[in-house]
Length: 456
Image 1 (tube, helix red, strand yellow):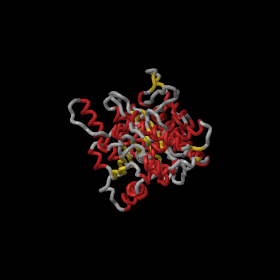
Image 2 (cartoon, helix red, strand yellow):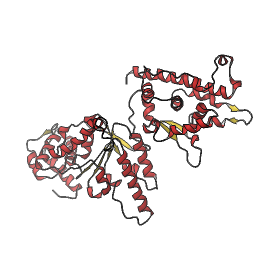
Image 3 (cartoon, helix red, strand yellow):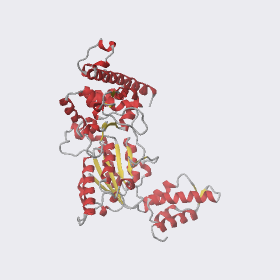
Image 4 (spheres, helix red, strand yellow):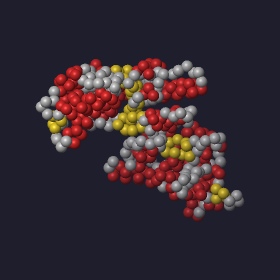
């Protein structure tokens, strides 16, 4: 991102922090009149809402555009600024280290949390309630609406409360701005999360093109429907007014033998449409502990909501498998997991692609929730020939290599042919040659057949 955008963002953040600091100072002065300085006394404020908010009408920064687009109120801007303050100007919150001299402790109404490493004040919903409402209980109660799932804060994954465990008061929860919006409000660039325990998904990319994907024309036609939806969904849902009849998002199931191009297809759809594709690591998602799988999936879906992402679940039957008769608590829990996943998949506004080798392993309830169910067959002889020629195009190949004969004789998928290519490249280098010969290819094929439990 260019320096100019960083500068614009910094200027807007500066104005917001200056405004927040003034609002906090006025609230503390109204609560504790004896703290007011002579300079402050020259300007009388009856309420913090009288402090004018910085204008964003002509503000080109990301923060300014978001505030304008969502038409944030005074209360919403205070909450957003409080969540940003620890990241961009933590000293704004030092005023809350004021101690009650009678009880020799910090004021309960200030809220706040202590970080493991951060030495400053971490605001909670209690902090926001004090700044905005003071001692007005009605205003305080109304603030609860700003933290509900239907509010833009939550719906757009801008910020939410870090809910505490147990029976702690709601407002004791920390104000947490999402990594996505923190990145946009500072650098101006879009957020691309890295694989982690809190986000068990990896972004996929490919340098291949559609010409490298060898599939039957009918299968390619089915795949093109996904791209068409991504391109025209706004027209269908908004301009044509079909949002009442049609669910948001698009769901597709890819099934067929391994190595037939399911993962590559997902990558190419993302590449063609300019979308990020994230493959979900099911080993990090599925948990033996009750409720943990749902929590792990909720993190992914919450972060992916309203993003231009494609969520790709490889070997999806491990997570979306058939439900069984509930003979014990484990079966009931497993069925609850599938039911939860069904709901999240159906409600997701983006594109979801599930891939499996065996369609029969998938729960039948998912079938009606897919817009397309696409079969990726093993390639026929002519398609295998194209795959062999495409894969070995960049290598020197001895004249005795007969790709038409190899393609006709050996029933391998594209994934297996790529494995043969890797083996042949190493074999040629190990003997000091730049050329692949037929013996290399035959040995590579033999290894691939042995993996599948077959003989040449």
